[in-house]
Image 1 (cartoon, rainbow, N blue to C red):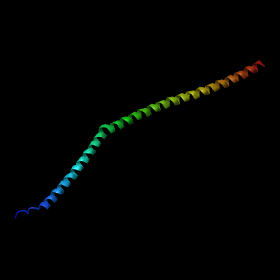
Image 2 (cartoon, helix red, strand yellow):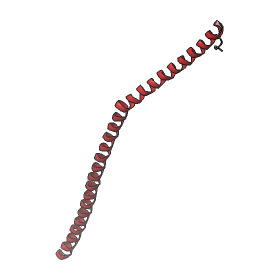
Image 3 (tube, rainbow, N blue to C red):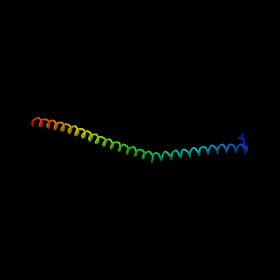
Image 4 (cartoon, rainbow, N blue to C red):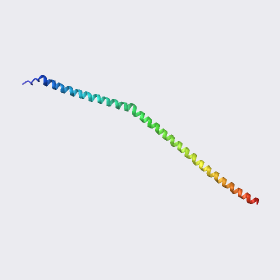
Amino acid sequence: SPAPVPTKAQANAEYGDQEAEAEKRFINLKSLGSVKTELDILERETIPSTKSAISELNRGIRSNREEVKDLTTGVDSMVRAEEEARSMASDLDHIDRLQKECHK
């Protein structure tokens, strides 16, 4: 027997359901598209510029470490020079005392 012909109301209801489903799918596709666009932007722009910024920071950190080493070396040699100067001053004082005793 032939399938019953749907009434106009049934056909409209069925069509409305299909249309609503298609609309939902379209919205999902559009949001997937915008997510893909966001991912593309991340991949193309944000991630490389972040990596570049990190590399720049790392270069700065290495450079700062070198400067700190140089400063530390400079401070160490200044401390050594000060110790040598004190030692020389002490030697000079000692020589002065010896000379004064010799002249007595």
